Amino acid sequence: MRLAVIEGDGIGREVIPAAVEVLDAFGLEFEKVPLEIGYARWERTGTAMSEEDMEIIKSCNAVLFGAVTTVPDPGYKSVLLTIRKELDLYANVRPVKPLSGVVGVSGRSDFDFIIVRENTEGLYSGIEEIGHDLSWTKRVITRKGSERISEYACELAKKRSGKLTIVHKSNVLKSDKLFLDVCRETASSYGVEYGDMLVDSMAYSLIMHPEKYDVVVTTNLFGDILSDMCAALVGSLGLVPSANIGKKYAFFEPVHGSAPDIAGKGISNPLAAILCVKMLLEWMGKPEARLIDAAIADLLQKKIITPDLGGRASTAEVGNAVAKYIMQNL
Ligand code: NAD
Ligand code: IPM
Ligand code: MN
View 1: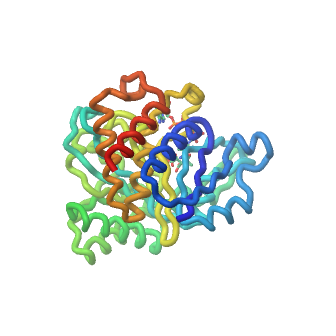
View 2 (view 1 turned 120 degrees about the vertical axis):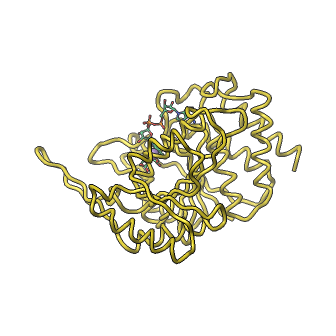
View 3 (view 1 turned 120 degrees about the horizontal axis):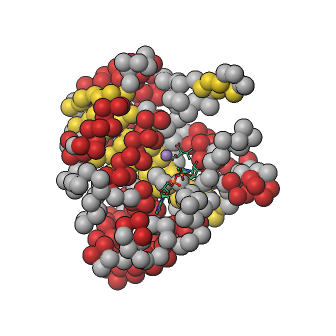
């Protein structure tokens, strides 16, 4: 197993070392390949990621990634988006599940759902023109793209409650009619019970009634926005992991960004990154992945938590406590 390890920028450099400490605690055979890519490198050298880096990433089976700063400079392209496209990581899977004793904005903890975000097209097509008086970005929905993401979501729904919610805005964006129709066809052929919601009312419903949902499938930008919003349901952006899955590769990263407002202070919450390690181990079929949940429950009870959750622990202390629990209970 060759694993590319990319810390990236800002708090990516804090949460990934904590996550790697947890991964190491399992004592599994990994060849870790560290890569320095991102905005800081671009500022220093003029290159955020070289072609050689991309080749190295392709020589790995999976990637553990922190966060990169993405700026709206016309000369700068997000390395994250480049990697997602190059590796054809079409499914961005974002589980939203409360941790014991941590209550978010809804005041509820009786929910457990997964956002399945289409990850290669939509408003992230990259087809755009930037002008002085007119700028536009083309929103692309394809049958193939909608088929494969809805198939992924239906497979997942079958393993869970069998319920799917298709989130779209086809009342205004006619392109979403294709997405909706294809998702409905796929759900019917899989025998998955489904419903659909307009994205605006879905945002409201997720806050009011998160317990109603199980697998939520949506287009790229809607999935991006809803996933940060849903982090408020579990109490912190520092608690939501994600897996970018393709046919060949998998890429694990927290939902949060490089958090320049707290970077360098050693107080970022590493649990989203640590839950990415859990998703990586699950993807590898390792049952011991569940030890991570037990470790997190243990430290929440002992209040070894970072300031975003009301605690005083540092990023490194949390990583260390999780790693120690795993070594003692493996
Ligand atoms: P952000 O997710 O970095 O931060 C939003 C807020 O959440 C901040 O107040 C931050 O302090 C807090 N936060 C985020 N993660 C946290 C953690 N682990 N522990 C405690 N608090 C945490 O969003 P932003 O500030 O809008 O973006 C900063 C940069 O990150 C931008 O350049 C953006 O493009 C980039 N970004 C990158 C990724 C990625 O690489 N996957 C994801 C999102 C944003
Ligand atoms: C995410 C991020 C990225 C996205 C940015 C940084 C390119 O917000 O992974 O959610 O928009 O997908
Ligand atoms: Mn995002």
